[in-house]
Length: 200
Image 1: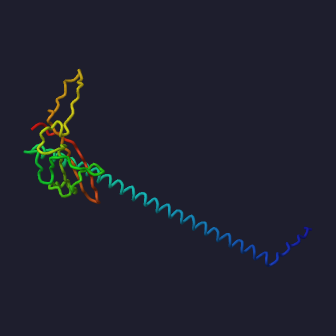
Image 2: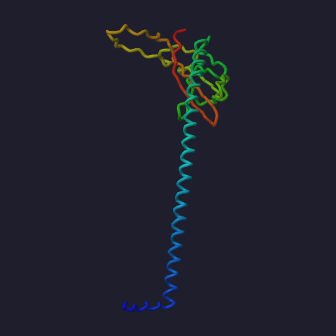
């Protein structure tokens, strides 16, 4: 004969209700935590999408800038050919050549509106403009180019292993070419170059 087991005493009604309330409260906390995790994951996904978009835009802007720098070479070469063809370098030519050094702004660019320069070269989707100023100061015409103008310097030391270099004459004056390239998406690139015309 098996021993009889006494039944567990019944819990009061208020205790049973409190256990149900606790169980429901725990289920509510789980939902809140799940929602918070979903919001965090959503924010992370949006941030990743934004980062990818910014990276794509940066790569595109870099490509536009590189293409603008390449287009500026056409402006430099065209300006140099125009300087070589000058009949009188003591006289301003239109609004692209100036016989004296132009004043510059804080960035070292000529303080004139290059956009108004008469020389405009279309290069694909870019527009190239250039301005040339002779690196000379003082009254025109230049009577003492050695003192009034920036000239190409010569080295005194020569290597015994190589033939001596051939220099431009002392009267070879320097010209500053400033090229502005404008393109899509507000791309704007400036390039400056010093060139030597030689004696005339």
